Image (cartoon, rainbow, N blue to C red; front, side):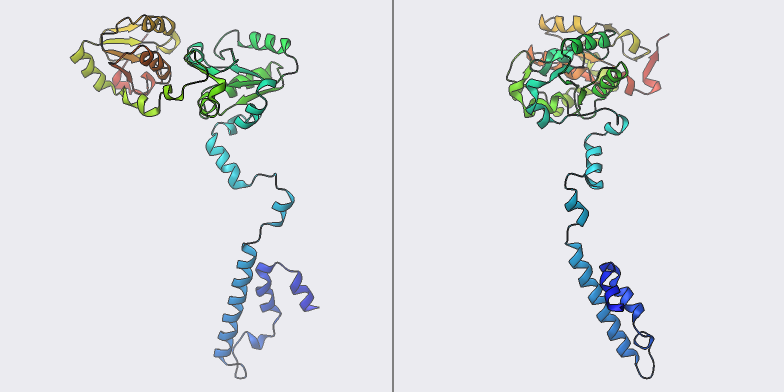
Length: 321
């Protein structure tokens, strides 16, 4: 009976149970069983336990074989690292690059970013409906009515961009269903599928024209650095922020406010082409798209405020009342 019971217990604890079932003389040293014999027995017991544990350590957990589709805790942790905002929007369904590529013709792609970003780069055939627009829901509702059965796939820039999550959430609140977030974003999409991407009005997208993080970083400067550049080069300082973003301004002289759409027209016309230009935005993110236009038109001397106005400390800004 004792032997049958031992075979049924967990192998990890089997040696310990065996130890409890052995008679006391084999555990405690006595005159009949000297200390050396007891030590020898314990060493043998430890070795047996170690080999048993190693054997089972290499065996795949039995439940993982029964549920091969299930994600492990480790894989979920890595998924959260890759898509850090997913945990904040658990109700939003997402679609992967591979799935979207396979179902591209059977889905409707919606670019939820600004029209400026859309004009720089977008998925081929995607419809521009900016999440920031006051007509976002009315346009999305009309699109759904025109296409009652096709899944809607909304996207923005990438893994740390919250726009597509917010856009899908808002759509769900207004009863728009069968809608997904492609949260890998356009920057992942263009590298995986240049043939289905429009970059600067060209398709397939020319990947050599993508501006890298290093190229963007190369033109970013701190506020003190920009002051010196402005002084030495008689630079034109341009603030592209919207009215609602202008609660404070950096301490720079002679800032000129130009709306983004108007600025892009001026860049296309090569206005101020021969001057040093300094650009300011709220967070430093809008200017990455301005850089595409500057490079396309051959501007050479231009700089961006690193991190935008929102990254400046109180001593570096003037509050606008």
